[in-house]
Image 1 (cartoon, rainbow, N blue to C red):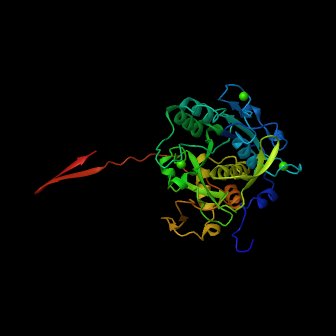
Image 2 (image 1 turned 30 degrees about the vertical axis):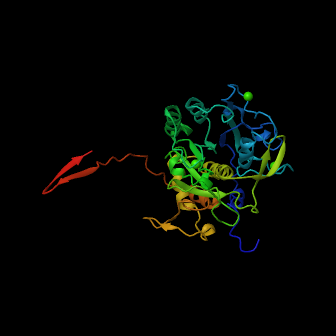
Image 3 (image 1 turned 45 degrees about the horizontal axis):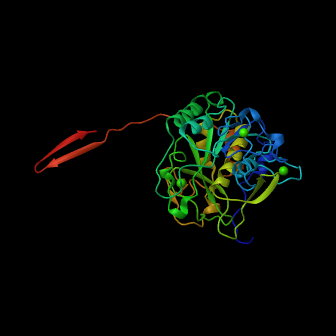
Length: 347
Ligand SMILES: [Ca+2]
Ligand SMILES: [Ca+2]
Ligand SMILES: [Ca+2]
């Protein structure tokens, strides 16, 4: 393990401060959740769970074979595995309530997305989503009318008006030169777009670049690098959860710790806090970091750096709420010039 950067998201100091996500409700929008899993069942929250694919209240995954449709169960475990029960591991927010919406195991329409993104919006604090448009390097797609409506309702009315938090994986299409700027879910202002870093603090082969990447969490990297340990279907455990799919739920768990510490945080506060407290240092071996206008380091692969739970929670405890979102519109000015004379057009 020599020469490795700091290999954690700095959550242990937060547990010592007494926070474990208790009281926070998180919903994983995915291919289902094995809610009777030994390491999930005590934190499972049926009120915020639903099956959009079969239109019933039970989001249990479909068992065609055990490894298929395990994605949602794996993501849920990272967030809220039970502590000290000799099973699998410990979720980042092991005291939080975890639910799931089964929505990826069928035809994915705007109706399904809108239903999932808005399911139990008056109860859910954080949604975690690790999906998006095809990662083929040639798809430009974003939320449709119903999905957008659900996002907007979440940030304006969710959490008693403070705004629901949407955590989004920024994609695994790096091998196809896919770019998350073309993914309207991860680049939405309403979502917190999370990239990944390998155990060596390097940008993984599957990672996507885009300006909307807000921060980074650890995940798989090159062939021999470690992957993420979590719950798996069939009441089992895995050591091989991979991709940005595995990074975003870690971020969702960290945010749950901050929401418990300071329940007054708005959806915009959470974004600002991540910007100010994420770490450049563990990822500094990657070339390409820039310094932005307020002096923070930023990179289109890692956003503002590796998430730091202790820094996030400590800063959240003494935080002044940022102003509400406002929209600026500027007029585009075009000069049309002929020899000797220019016309000014406002568009
Ligand atoms: Ca079902
Ligand atoms: Ca456990
Ligand atoms: Ca993508």
